[in-house]
Length: 402
Length: 83
Image (cartoon, rainbow over all chains, first blue to last red; front, side, top):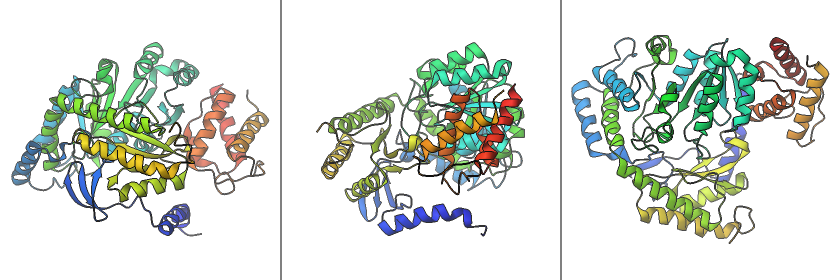
């Protein structure tokens, strides 16, 4: 036994991948060309696994704002938000995010992971019960662990399961926090948010929605699923990230609760880390404007998502959910998914390979993330690559119908 | 009140189903080391147990248990706390 013994499971996984010579978890993008193209493994590659939903990473105005901030405010803040790390841009972005959602308060965190960690560890302590959907992101689990909350899971999107847990809580249901996501990142399916809001209305409690993958994607103004379903007023805490549709890094929470200011000062992941660099804040502020005005981008994203979803579905692939910018293709097992992923790389297509325990239900997934910046030709190239490789899967349950 | 034996029976049958009957399971069985149960599988087991016993179990219950017996006792504690 040594301090490293606990890593033997990981060592076995790494060893197996090394032996195969396929390593989806150690990809280096040698050169990034556009939001949807790069040079990977020496090949010109279409990037379809980047969460860059609106393609804003190369937006001209965002880059210009970044340059200005870099020139005038320097490379970094060198401090915590609570000490020297809050510049005027940080506070302005918080106000702009709050206004965007029609909420009173906003807090900016250094990453999306830290936004969940910071909010949940502060809101929910050892005396609090939090009900979370089983498919919630690791940052939600980790935040609840950090705060020592009683985290009780309910089956994914299973309203009956949620109701049962609320009923068991009795009077305490009024104090509980329910946590769900807008668009679940593994399977690409949406929360049954209307039904969950109904549960909250009947039993009481608070509701947090992580819109990491739905920000910029859903709703007329791009606020996310809550806006699309006209439920923004029913959500107590909305979490989001800058690192997907906004093309930067950072995270946030907006809320109408006046206690947000106290949460800010009590939140260890807010206090004990350096604040985002001024250039990141400047880029994000500009990206938020582009996102809000980006109805054309959302339209384009929807068209691209539907084209890829229909294309793969027509080929007979098993897709985990209806069309969204997250399109998860279900494979029969580890080796099949690994081989297919590797063959896609050789055809110049980069997508994400997702294995348990990161995936629900022990699924092996190839996850495509679609961008508004993908051209129709790129989408068709991806579909054609899947079609070409499908021939090697003829005995597989993946292919049914052709 | 839910009794020790009842909880033990539910957990044992849940574990047998999840490990496809490949292991002999008793109170001293080590969940991670003998059954190779990872954190996700352990949480899935909890969902089944919650349904069958009609009780909510926080996932943190898993962080301090190694054996089947320890898990049964931890769940027994929770059910008693609720009653």
